[in-house]
Length: 199
Image (cartoon, rainbow, N blue to C red; front, side, top):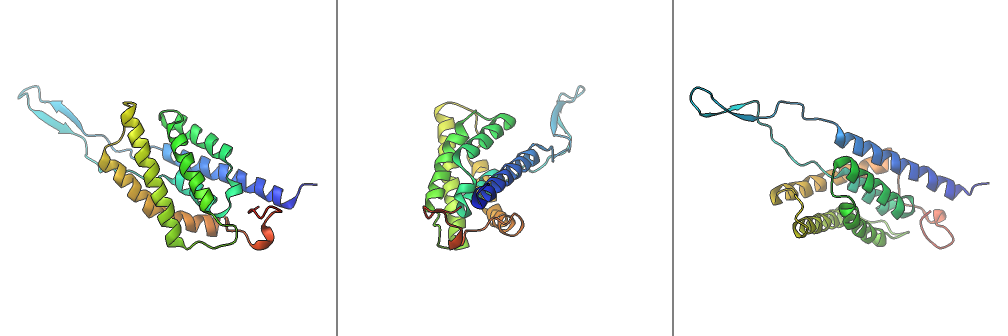
């Protein structure tokens, strides 16, 4: 017979996979379907004319990082390293990013967050938000620096700052979804395993 803690851990690992897949699928959707602004030459006057609309492109939050961090801050064993690496490598392939660079950088941040969790102590939400956003900002800046070193195209500095800000704004909402909808909450003392680790 399967141990109840092991079975529950397996169920929430599947939930983590489903949430990650949903986030990746949502980011792949073509949400901006408006015509792009195109510059053309007027054949009679030779002047540049602009056709189509001009749209503000605001970098969205990194929801995959947010949900992974929210799981790690509550139940570290429900998001093991191997599972996180597989999800992030799949995201690299689908988003056509340099394969393995962001997973390698972000996994250092995730392991830092994993070490900050305490099996019995409740972490205040403002402190958690500051910790996660600070870790994300450091990971993004290191990632950008590696892009520069290896001469890989990367977003402008302003877009990077906006990306960090939108992620910081989104994380408290992710905490709410994780706690109230997904029911991923910190363990009570009775849920600790024999090693005193969250089950």
